[in-house]
Image (cartoon, rainbow, N blue to C red; front, side, top):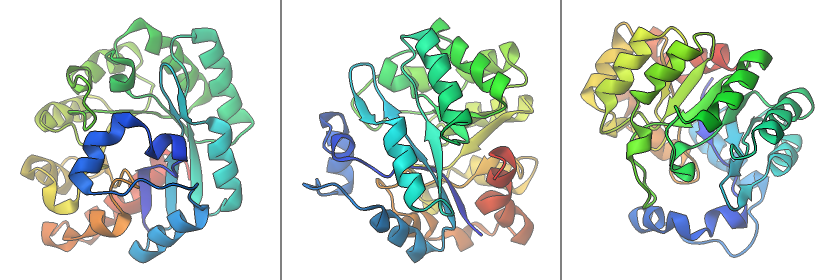
Length: 268
């Protein structure tokens, strides 16, 4: 079994947003002109043997790229394959808390994701704290991005060390930092090692691009700390998994990486 911890089934608003122009330049990804069917995402999963994907909403300060209700609709088309991850507007704290409760209790989502670079604010910003409180109260992970940004936005807010303060203030909060933290991967490893409930996912990177320090962490004391992710549609599952065998993780570690850790953390 393979679980993708970070994916999107995109809307046209999402894939056409100018903020992703730099990513399109890197990947030569064409811009769709019509809404993409859920079956396309399922087909990409099938090509790589991915059983389940956590697909996320995208809520930015001034627009909603993928709404929570749209994610719920996508999940309803393939409930055995897709898992919802909600997002919220952190500038409206009480609305955000109410929406998190709706996402978990009514829509059946398994986590909440907010991206610091979209808000140009680090995870220690006071606007995030009601989100953390709600996630703790509901017992769901908070997912976020760590590392530099592909879009042309400031990267400093993605420094993994900010999660050290968050984990100290909310020791019971489960935090999953996506995109491996590069170029601060050592920081990400240090924070994940220090804090019981902090994890890393490998989204936005193919297996051959994992930093050696992360691979060594996965093979040793971090075997329960790293989750497979793609950041689909930026990277397809098949591309993300290329050269995985070259890492020589061993059967137990590879199983934890591809499904066991995500299954446990997201209670799938």
